[in-house]
Image (cartoon, rainbow, N blue to C red):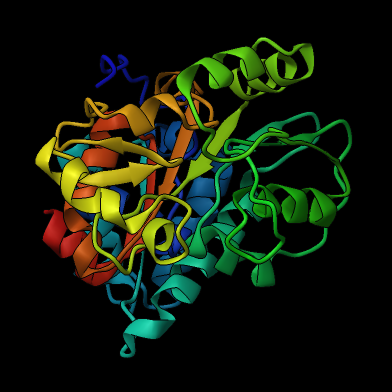
Length: 320
């Protein structure tokens, strides 16, 4: 587990499922001043004043916060305090579980649309949740921005290919993408070390380390987890990994409940950016949800010291 960074609460902008309601919540419920809210949101005090005035005029703020998203905002604030997050985004848990990845993916797309700017570098993983976000991303051409894949590639191009997400996001923003042009898992640690010695791959790793935002998800240790279901890692390793304390997989690395890499040889054969490098990115965003992912999410929050969590309301309650 990496050492916790000393957080500057104003370092990354506060985000929300409903930012206007969150503004009203901070002011009327938690007693933040307008100046403090402006600093957290990275906006002017005038904008905060206008938002608060509108919340009164529209009946959002009366004696209580009166909005359909108020419960989500309450969960967001509780998560931020409980896990030391700069921000949390909580979406309603869909009635049908099969729509969960799409619901969280929508929030991920909205987050990227709001946060990505000219000149920024996004380092991004793969997985079902991040793949689900692609259908909601709005095309917007950025200048001098880049997208870097955090994980290597598979020999086929189905959606499960981790590097495919980085490529698609780069296309949406009209920017260059950088890929780890090596298999997700190689045969032996020595080969992994030799591949990282290649100048082109070292350059990709350096770009990832210098990223402005790192966006990733987390998986569990059950047979239906994407990494095992699609045999990215052989399912027969589930029991040996669990015996070593594995609770979650992140970027195809396996970590225990405290976010530490487990002592298993597979972790030395993964072609992905190291978790401690990801943890050093100024804004680490974790997007995940679902009952089976509560323990993995806790492990992931500890492993990379995430700044932002994007999840659903049921998972948020369980995390609290």
